Length: 336
Image 1: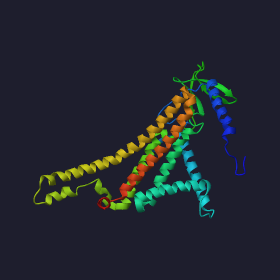
Image 2: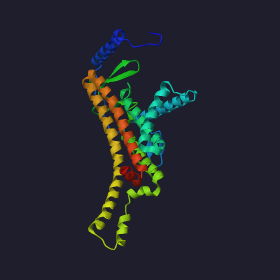
Image 3: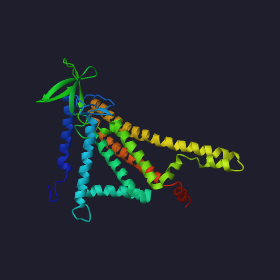
């Protein structure tokens, strides 16, 4: 201990790291890690539906929905902490509020240099999407996620069970005469649920159209419906080959622009879903085969989660910035 607080001393505390490594290797030998059950749909936690909606139907509590609620609670707590730090009357934020404020300021400066006067309108969507995806992806690294839950009996592809303490049971590779069992985790990374990624993609694409309409008005739809040259060519006294072909090319380009907007939903959804789901499967496989190298893979997943959050947010920012800029502004900037 020092006057400024506790500090890490490698010469003294290296034995703590060595002890943790030895303990993890010993426990992996006593209770052999197994391959968890992998499936695309989220698992139901409640055996009966919570309620029944008129159009949607039965509504169950799933483990990815629990993860979503945890992410929401963490974001709300972060916002309240930053708000409390801003109300202390200090000119400069410090501590946790200062760290979050620095991140938001960096995001805003990036937006201001790209979107100009529309940076303030794009900031809530860009920052929220990045923070939500970042927390959702990093939840995969928290102990207990995908590993603590309810043991259920299955007909095939299951494992045996063993009691490890009062009221605590684990699944093991040993055969069990009572049947086969699998683990249904209480919390599963929400980014591995396609419903979550599709919802984020829809929010990104729909709000891009909303901002485009707010900025350009009805003229925003000109890039989708380009019929001006088509109607104008019938009034020309002389029509050359170029005058006949160009209107149809513009109509075709407008259709491509419309198809591209729907393609963004698929691109956003499956890029995030595929990377995080594949990362989770990689952790499961290596954890069951070579537990000692799992820490290195988790560090890799830490960077992958950050990169995927930035990619989703940056693409949203770029598309929103392009939507609020008219073709006249773009041609003027390229000329200058």
